[in-house]
Image (tube, rainbow, N blue to C red):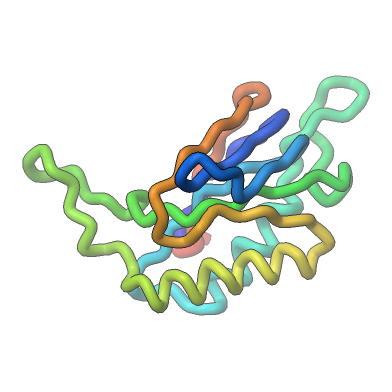
Length: 148
């Protein structure tokens, strides 16, 4: 699984002009699933992301995690993270997981993060979504569960 993690002051996701997920302070996570991913990959990311020390303390040092601050997460499924752009100009999405498998792992990841004490808002799996956020910092990280 791949995750693009962005520290956000606020964020929202809409589907057909209707807000389906909104957070005030926390992380926006774009999550992609590939064929080989398992529950173990979801667990790894769910234990890693909420505890990343990427929020500033009183001295301006990145020493606090989402859990430390009681922040929220906006989780968005993003199959295009597995787009291969090496050949030609049209991305190849053959590495993206099949929808049934991907949705199951996406939902598992969200539940596991909630189990860590984080309120999770989500987009709508498989829908065309509009995501808006104010990236704080900006702080953006890419985490791949296969690169441990």
